[in-house]
Each structure stands twice: as C-alpha cells, then as structure tokens.
Length: 63
Image 1 (spheres, rainbow, N blue to C red):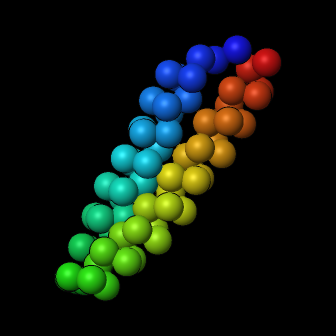
Image 2 (image 1 turned 135 degrees about the horizontal axis):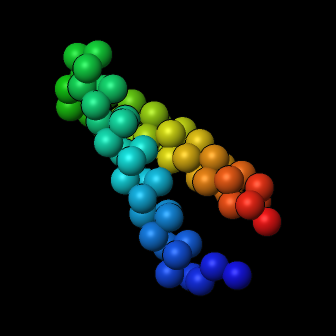
C-alpha cells in the first residue's frame, strides 16, 4: 500500500504540472490579469485531474 507521503507527492506533482500547463496556455492565447488567472486555474484543474486519473489507472493496472 502506497504511503501517505507518496500520495502527497503525487498530488503536488499533478497540481504543479496542471498549473504550468494552464499558465502557458492562457498566456499563449494572449490573456493577462484576472482573466488569465481564471482561465489558467480552470485549465490547470482539468489537467491536474486528468493526470491524477491517468496515474491511478496505471497503478491499478500494475496490480
């Protein structure tokens, strides 16, 4: 059974990658200020969730 620390690291990694993707995408489409922050947060949450689901599927497949 994975430890709590491994789960915390995975959460931080997925959240961090999601935030970076959201930031890059919202910046690439030319947004600034509050709209950029809102779009980046929205995209970041979607990407982070997708990464978490993908990681969970990979771990479940190995079992």
